[in-house]
Structure formats: structure tokens, C-alpha cells
Length: 138
Image (cartoon, rainbow, N blue to C red; front, side, top):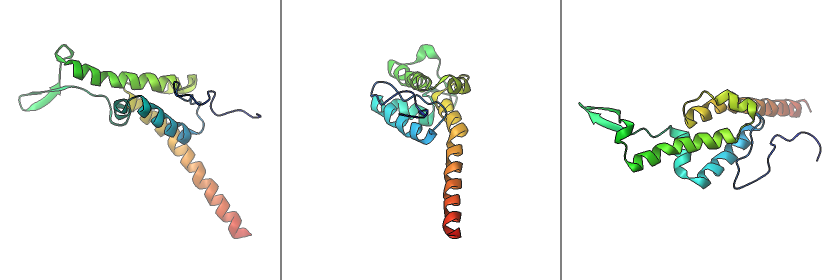
């Protein structure tokens, strides 16, 4: 095979596809499938943010102290850690450092999407526009 591949890893059900900054939409779709195959709760953490147990106090909700979390609440909170681990494992060094300061899997995902998601869409729109112009000229 000639030319540089966009992804260094092949297909695997045990390892996420490595993202090197190219073909974001493809990587995004593959990552969603990969993560959901492990646990739907992990994907929920990526889409909606980490689970943070709350406590009702004086009519309003506050963050529950860690020492008071139930086993189920601990399990739910760990889903974000698992999501962060999967995302960081699927990134090359440059992309890793782009999201390394993020505090949650959602923040990581949103940062990657903001950085790469619109770039690919813009290129697609430009390519379609150029193709339409060429058809009109012919």
C-alpha cells in the first residue's frame, strides 16, 4: 500500500482506532461504536458529562461528599474515568496534549469535535461547491 495512512492501527475489537488528526468524522463514528460495545454508560458519560452524586440540602442540590457515596454511585462515577482512558488511548501524542488538561471525557470529546469536526465539514462543503461549479461550466 502506498501513501501515508490516516490511522496507524487496524480494526480491532479490543483497541480503539488511533486518531492522528485526520478523518475526524470517520474516527468519531468508529469511537462511538467502540465505546458503546464496552458499556453504554461510558458513552453516556462522554455525551452528557460525568455522573456527580448530589444531595438535597436546604431545598437545593449540592455535590455529595465522596465519603457518603454508595457503591452504585462510585460505579457510575468511574464511567467517566473509563471514558477518559479510552479517549486518551485512542489519540496520538499531538492530539493527546490537545486534551490533556480536560477534566472530563465530555470536555475531551467536545474539544476534539470543536477542533476537528467543523474542519472536515467545511472541506466537504467546499468540495461539493467546486463540483457544482465545474458542472455548470461544462
